Image (cartoon, rainbow, N blue to C red; front, side, top):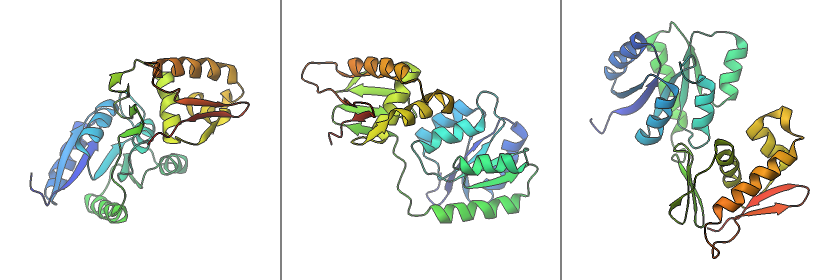
Length: 231
């Protein structure tokens, strides 16, 4: 691959669309990588670090908006949504979810190329993606869904991982019960603080792998939780 080529990741389950995009983009000085599912796309976005992503919303294994949400948890790479859905509600949902632009299928290749150039121009100078977040002995790999304490892999449930992920994103700051509940279980669960207390207790125990490792999660009584900033 030539150094001058811009790296683009296409996440789309339609083989014909991927083929069209590969031919068109390679003819315009892009290097193209392809993923046919949401999970594959997330893995490739983390490992390949593309400069721009073209994302279909109608993926077979995971809604494209969820893929977009997960990417935005650790990266500000430009994302252009490609979809047959054309309602204002769909466009608003994609743009509110962090998409940089929205192109409806069938699309004009020259128009798509222009929109890609604009998105790349707007992204110049953006801080590079950061897939790992750290606080002292704690390392959280967001796209990899892994947590290590002092180099030791910690086995967490999906809910426990999401709690750690939210807390470390705001390390050193109090995250309220309401915010945690909304982030993890949705807005209809914001009063269920007893569930949260049980899960946070389990997480706290799992992260303390040795006596000399400090309790990484502090409780702010009646308010929420703080993950210590040890860096």
